Length: 418
Ligand SMILES: *[C@@H]1O[C@H](CO)[C@@H](O)[C@H](O)[C@H]1NC(C)=O
Ligand SMILES: *[C@@H]1O[C@H](CO)[C@@H](O)[C@H](O)[C@H]1NC(C)=O
Ligand SMILES: *[C@@H]1O[C@H](CO)[C@@H](O)[C@H](O)[C@H]1NC(C)=O
Ligand SMILES: *[C@@H]1O[C@H](CO)[C@@H](O)[C@H](O)[C@H]1NC(C)=O
Image (cartoon, rainbow, N blue to C red):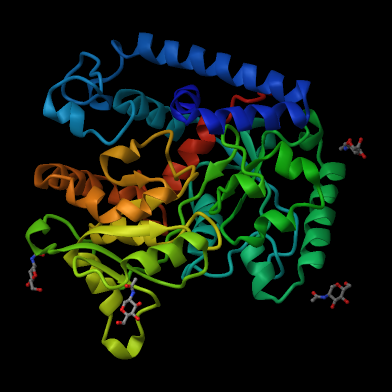
């Protein structure tokens, strides 16, 4: 869970996280972190001691705790860090987790309703729609574990609002909630969250620094240089829905291209990727987007025929290409120095993706060629297992992207408990 996550994140990120912690609200956040760690410990302990008495349906067939490093192949191929804890805690979440959605704000302008459920920022729209359709929503703030501030940055952008005005709109709105309701002041917003997939979400919230420093931000761009704080914030998967073609899977014999990427060269790593590999015969690297005139869905069909789909960051570390690769059954190759990948604390990304540093771009072909056929088949099988976690639905269904985001929020509910 959260403690396991910080133990697994690279030393550089946890030390930068802790320096942020101390440079910000000092003692308050340090206290919150300690509380989180001790609550996590207690809930882990109680889950472990409960597991022997839990109903068998909650547990995978074997009742003895399975260790991920153990040698049986099922354990090795598992895509979760702790499958038993995930199953038990997920069931607990479904039973107990309650969120209060502030009802204020004009639904026709920037609040409450999503702009749309399609396109690059669909994740934001789906979350807004799903939370209202779900049983997690409570009308009674006294029963709430967390409070949702429903500001849609995507919608503000759609209405052509300037950055300056967005900052003011968000500030005025949240200040109105702070003076009307008693909930924010209890924790200075630590049990409040907002959800934004649009990159402008960060700028829009700068008018109220506690929104960035203390509230939980669920954002598609988990870049540390725009203030993402790994132990409190949540990486929202960027999913471009609807998908143009059905999910891939069990089709390894058709995957004859080693690697594929085509896109805009809007970041340094993409420029290098294109420059180094554009003429290679095994890596299909196009230094520009595939033109629609080339043929119907040529870009998407390449995902079916490729083993490894290269996912370099663009203007931000995230890209909808990762969810596309997962959907079409092509192993995503994450090419970023730092990326707090979505559901990183639940899913073991090493089991269904290849995670590289930007500098590895020069050895990309050798690295991919060194992955044996059996390793590739195992990655592909696992990839198919996680497809459901990277897909939004309306109404939401069990274990889909909405429920995974809710689970990440559920793990953070104890930071400060009232
Ligand atoms: C910004 O807000 C001002 C004052 O409300 C308004 O006159 C102006 O049209 C707004 N501009 C944009 C681009 O939203
Ligand atoms: C919360 O605190 C702020 C700043 O101290 C204050 O202006 C506001 O009225 C308080 N809200 C409530 C509901 O008491
Ligand atoms: C492999 O590709 C062929 C030709 O496009 C297609 O008909 C077949 O269904 C594919 N096989 C699988 C397992 O997807
Ligand atoms: C790729 O081929 C084009 C056309 O022949 C050439 O201009 C370009 O320099 C080549 N790129 C690399 C990296 O060799």
